Image 1 (cartoon, each protein chain N blue to C red):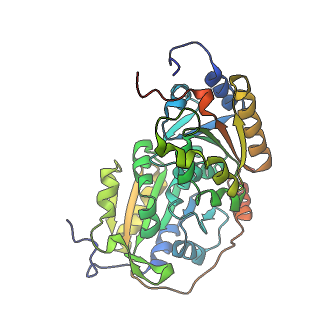
Image 2: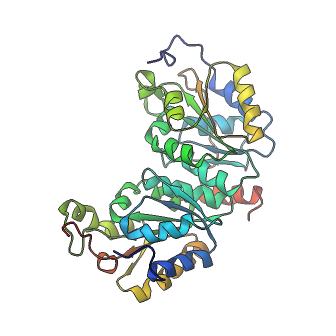
Amino acid sequence: MSDARKSNQPRLDRRAAIRVLLAERGDLMVVTGLGSTTYDAASVADDERNFYLWGAMGGAAMVGLGLAIARPDRPVLVVTGDGDTLMGLGALATIGVQAPPNLALAVFDNGRYAETGMQPSHTDSAVDLIGVARSCGIAAAFDIADEAALGEFAGRVQRKEQTLFACIAIHADEPPRVLPPRDGVLLKNRFRRASGVE
Amino acid sequence: MSDPASSSDWRDDIFAALKSADIRQIGYVPDAGHARLIELVQADPAIRAVSLTTEEEGIALAAGAWLGGQRAALLMQSSGVGNCINMLSLAKACRFPLTMLVTMRGEWAEFNPWQVAMGSKTQAALELMDVLVYRVEQEVDAAETVAAALDIAFNGGLATAVLLSQRLIGAKRWVK
């Protein structure tokens, strides 16, 4: 087993990481997972082309898949945590089979359930999400621990050439929460309006 | 069971209803009762067939499809409804349109008692999550019921399920 997920690895600040991912978003559509990645995305801007999951844990990647299939003309980025990814691990297998070229998954991996008291997740010890993604057929899977590599990944997302997966090592901290709207109907309707389907 | 190569039957009529409603993505976990429909979906270049590892993935898939301007529907067996319960909160909280076509097990001449636990509670579980449930007992009603469920889902932003009864599908034959 690789020791890539151990705590001595260089790690990124999560708010710095989201700024790199969304710095030049162009017409990027973003789905965020339950919890901290939603606050991260909102900390950059409460963009109408962000769809935040305030529940439905384990569902972020599959929302991204349905969206990517429906909109092959647009890059779709799912930003979520290791806990959400672990709860919906089968989604990586489903996405590996579908292989939409315009879908990218970025997992902010702190090896913790930050929302509930920083309990260790499976990625803190035995589980290597890069290995899982590759085994599911997502060949372009990257272990990212610095901003230069993250910037390169963000560039790949825009090119829509193949399904992408990034495991982004972040510090286990809790920056101040930035809370976007929680009204699901509002989030849905404004997303559809902003992307020209309503 | 029906012969997949046989001429048009109620499954073909359901497929026609899905086409009429402009369904463009179908998420499914295979079931013998859905085999014919899955074949038809896979053969249609205008529909993306998405094989799922678990049924709850489909609820999220359908939400994403709608965000992107496409209509999705789901095919699953009654046991899979249990896997969907928390994910149905996504449909409810955001009022995503949703139609699930559910083949029933555990209710009519069932051989396997393990199927009865979920099969006997499928409708109640869906209704607990405010999914509108329609049952089909006869072939003649199948396509019309699916069309009605799709209408109310996509016109009203509501979650719907059509339960295709085990009597309709035919009990699974374990001992030939």
